Image (tube, one colour):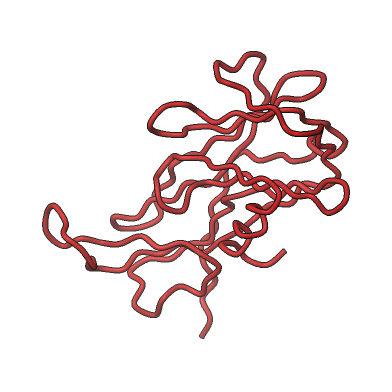
Length: 174
């Protein structure tokens, strides 16, 4: 019997992205990369963040969301050329926990968190399908991926062009 995985999402309305030109990106400069911002040629930047959601015993997932912000305190990194977003596609991945750890831990009864295309391991203690990224398609097949980190809670990562292709390997096929 196939039991559907519980799905977790955040506030992610992608309708304003297609048709927008971005000219720079920024990532939170702190130890924790709590956001990725995309500067638009006109208007407020898009800011991607994650939201923690309880998904099971010792299991929390971090779906990605996007909003507009008037001001973002960050260091902008200019793109080589402006990027016209032609398409914005949500990216899903499977996340799960397994009891135990492969390395030293603090405390007893550790659980290890995994994330990827799936399927989850048969030994998974808890499983979820998480809307964890956004694929931005541009001209000439160029792509950008903005995604919740698969290894650090709350972190948001950005993958430009060739790196975006490698990042897509961690998500369900689109």
